[in-house]
View 1 (cartoon, rainbow, N blue to C red):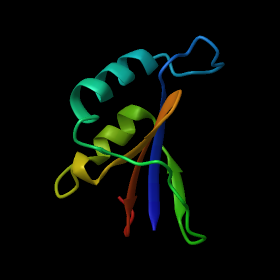
View 2: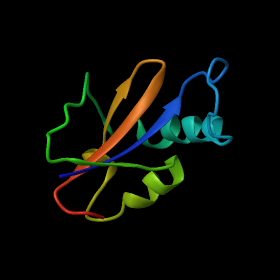
View 3: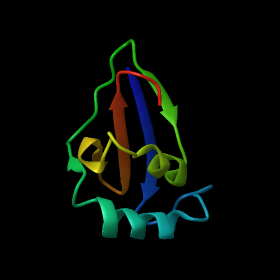
Length: 90
């Protein structure tokens, strides 16, 4: 399995090294995709899962037919952990 993931901070005031585009990415996710993606409490990783960290822009670029935002899962606390799990690499 392949887990593509990105992180967007809700508040960057106490975050060192947050992306310069974090606020724009947060606004984009909350406005355009959060309502379609599925919120989950946690993500558990299999031993045979490859985890691929992406920037938000690179993550959004992965969401192309036949994949849609309905396939995306996210966790929410002081940040959004946005995840896409696929059987084959993208």
